[in-house]
Image (cartoon, rainbow over all chains, first blue to last red; front, side, top):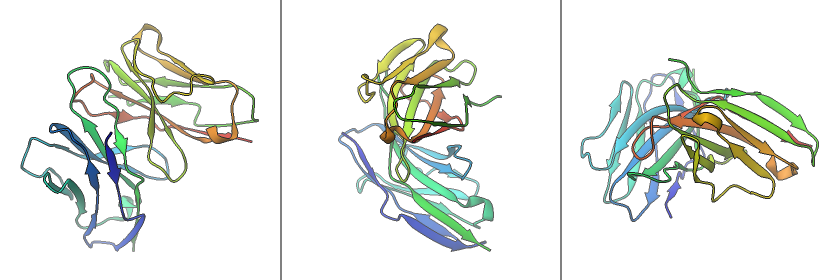
Length: 117
Length: 114
């Protein structure tokens, strides 16, 4: 079974600064996907970024980028130029690649990020 | 494009009562998921549908939880009878298909069982 670990329950960052959230995972699969989701107080789970394990290039989405280290099973999220609207719970999630059958997301426990003005 | 819709947003019930949640996925999405998110934890899959068939319900407490997806579109999740430990946020998600596609989430229903 896959597990996802987020070792930082809470973090804070000053507005306009950069912050990195950590995530490690355990799997015996060779082909899979990794995600970061953001959950603000409204509870809506919003996709931040997605990484395919077969791609060596790290994914980027505007101010958000990842550092994917497949051998180390590490998948950290870097938020640049932090904004007040980035304040939320951030969840790291794993999904194995299957051609059919069950494809649930396996989530970590989350990191609560506070951006301070 | 409209997102995943869920209702109600909030529900408060007494233990041993029944409750039902509704989900309407993104148009054209064949795969639908129900997740349970207990306070302070990440979501956990309850059930996955592909069109109107169940793909995985291994973590659904079948003695009290049931779910259906008629006509492969909308879905309902029911709890009968509810227990205190069922207090959680119930999230519905959908994806174009299973295997490789990103899951998109609805706003969730917060259930409080007293």
